[in-house]
Image 1: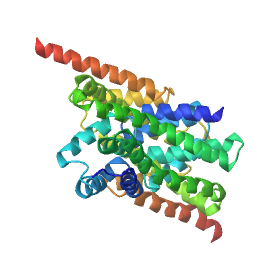
Image 2 (image 1 turned 120 degrees about the horizontal axis):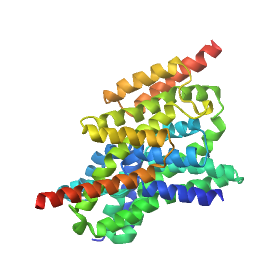
Image 3 (image 1 turned 90 degrees about the vertical axis):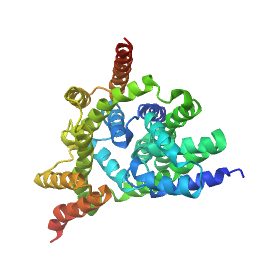
Amino acid sequence: MITSLFTLFRSFFKIGLFTFGGGYAMIPLIEAEIIDRRKWLARDEFLELLTLAQSAPGPIALNTAVFIGYKVRGIRGAVASALGAVMPSFLIILVIAIFFAEVRHNVVVDAAFKGMRPAVVALIVVPTLSLARGMHPALIGVVILSALAVWWFGFSPIYLLIAGAAAGILWTTRIRKEVRR
Amino acid sequence: MIYLQLFISYLKIGFFGFGGGYAMLSLIQNEVVVQHAWMTNTTFTDIVAVSQMTPGPIAINSATYVGYTVGAQGGLGCWGGILGSIIATFAVCLPSLTVMLLLTRFFLKLKGNRYIEGAMAGMKPIVIGMIGAAALLLIFPSSDEGASFIDGWSWLLFGLCVLGSLRKWNPILLIVLSAVAGIAIYYVPTVV
């Protein structure tokens, strides 16, 4: 039986609606909905999907939706799933943005945001530390240099990403050649 | 033309958005706060806070929100904001959609491709550095107007949240608790 585009849309709408706190939080949701309930993906394909979703730019949730949608119903399926994944975010944020403009200067809201700002910074600092832990000292040097380049010198991170990708490609191809010799 | 600039900025953010939501924050911050000066660091931090607390990927939530905020400056009011949010959200999704479709189509050929593996490995330290830069820019903004840290209480809350986050506390819970603390610290003394 052909899966309808609406079913794809609905499944990813549900995943988008209940994903709090970034890409990895939605892995159990995807397992339950896509693998167990709909059987659009075999369990051993799941790891391949995650690798692919992380290699492509953009949010993992969106990349996953595109992959599954394409696998089930081709390009139209990919668009339906992507719309489903994005729609809950879009609608909720739009309502908040419209409403928030009016309460922004409320003294209580203002006080709450003064408390929330340091928390947001903390939530960004911690992954930096945990990701860098256990890395080679030379790579930690690269981490620090790129942080300084973006923060202090206002470099666009885009050039650094391109440079990093180029260096990584040079490195792996050179290593391969040496092994062959 | 603010809407065209918004579209191009978010297309760039989407296309170079490797490494998940936090790494994308650095790109967004660079485009929206540093390059175009569409908003202050404080407004940006507030948008990140709201994006954290609502469901869905941070990149998409913040695209919708930033798009609304920037679009509303275009002179059309609320409708300009809605137009801006549609443009930014569409632009940030477009690269994902096209790159993923290409990867999915040619996946079998790409699997284990050493060029892709090399590129990913090379980008990893840069991505971590970008996350660090986003944090540094929020801690030490270029002007006082964008300050996230206003007094000792800010640093205390920051320290507690770092500890909580290291102990794997739920990030939404940490933000909500900090909001309550903010009300207790900055609002309650003014009325009691």
